[in-house]
Image (cartoon, rainbow, N blue to C red; front, side):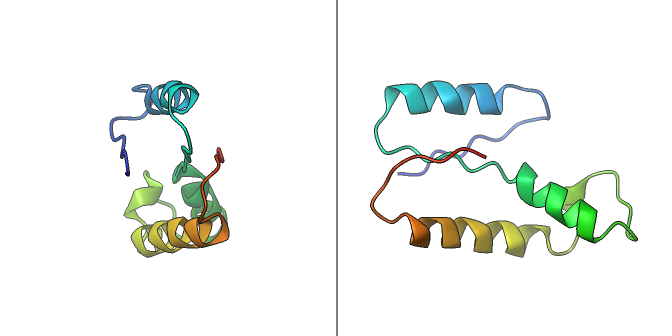
Length: 80
């Protein structure tokens, strides 16, 4: 099962995900903001107000999530 929490910055998505993880087994938390920080650092010559506006944002987030699942296919939790 995938639970995708979406909302504005500061809306409480991380807090909600941590509460869910404390109540459910085999929960993984993946925060794509870490990918956004990486892209912002590596594409500093292309300043944008929101890193989600960067072209590589969607494919890099998807590829990262896929590789994290491949690395830990049997479950467990991670937090970023």
